[in-house]
Image 1 (cartoon, rainbow, N blue to C red):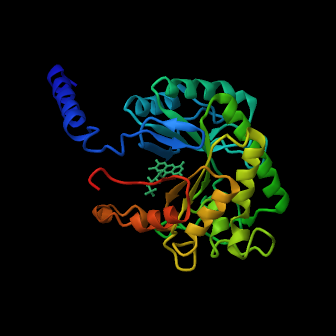
Image 2: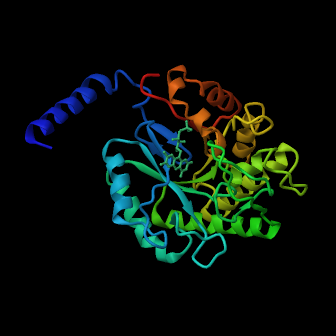
Image 3: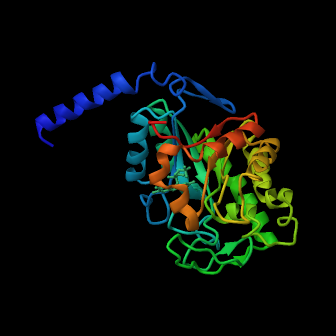
Length: 322
Ligand SMILES: Cc1cc2nc3c(=O)[nH]c(=O)nc-3n(C[C@H](O)[C@H](O)[C@H](O)COP(=O)(O)O)c2cc1C
C-alpha cells in the first residue's frame, strides 16, 4: 500500500477505536471477565479456527504463531487455538492434517506460541478434537451412521469406535492436557460440536450404541463427562476446561434445544468451567451460519436456554451490530 493508503487506514482504525469500539459503547464487552481460575481482560473471545498452518507432522510453525499473535495484538481477551490432536505419530488416530500436542516433540512450539500470545496480554486456550465421521477417509464415530456435507456429498461411512479405543482416547486427552499446562495454556477446550466424533455421541441420530455410551442423555454425554474428569484428574482440578457443543444440530431427531441445556448442566456438574455454545454440523452449516439471517440474532434463544441452566459462563457468537 502507498503512504497515503496507509495514512487513510490509520485514520479509519483510529476512528473505529475512538468512536465505535470505545468502552462507553460496549462497556460490558470491554469489562474484565473470569473463567475458572483466570481473569480475561475483556469478553472478546477468538473462537477456535483450525487453519492449515501446521508443520509436516502437525508442529506449531512461525505462521501459526504469527496468525494468533496478530489477533492478540488486536486486543482479543481470550484466544482459542483451533482443533488440535492429542494422538502422537504412530497412533491409529494420528493425522498430520491438524496441529498436534500428543508428544514431547511438540512442546517447544506450543511454549513459543503461548508465550507470544501472552506477551500481548491475551489468555490462550487450546481445543482438542477428533474428526469422527465427517471425512472422506475411513474413520470412527459413535456408530456406523453415514454423514453428509451440506451440498449432499456423502462422507465415508465410519465404523463404531470400540470401548477400548474410547478409554485410550480419554487417557490421551488427559496426557494432552498435562502437555498443554506445561506449555503454559490457560485452558483446554473439548471439541464436542459440529458433528465431529464427540458431538456425534450427543446426537440420538448418530449415536445408536447400546452400551453405557448410548441411549439416554446421561449415557450419550458420558464420554465428554469422562474427558472433563480425566483432564481435571491429570492436569489438576483447578486447570480450566471448556466444552464446546452444538446446542442445535438443525436436524430432526438430533440434538436440539430440548436437550442441550441439560447437556451443559451435566458438564458443569462434571467440572467444566465454561461452555462454548455453537450450532450445526457439516450437513447443516448453511443453516447455522446463515448470513442472510445474521441481523435476526437467531441463535440467541439457544444461548439463553443453555445459560439459564448453568452458573458457569458461556461463550457464544454475536455480531457487532447486535
Ligand atoms: C476456517 C475455519 C476453521 C474453523 N475451525 C474450527 C475448529 O477448529 N473448531 C471449532 O470448534 N470451530 C471451528 N470453526 C467454526 C468457528 O469457530 C465458528 O463456530 C463459526 O465460524 C461460526 O460461529 P457459531 O457457529 O458458533 O455461531 C471454524 C471456522 C472456520 C471459518
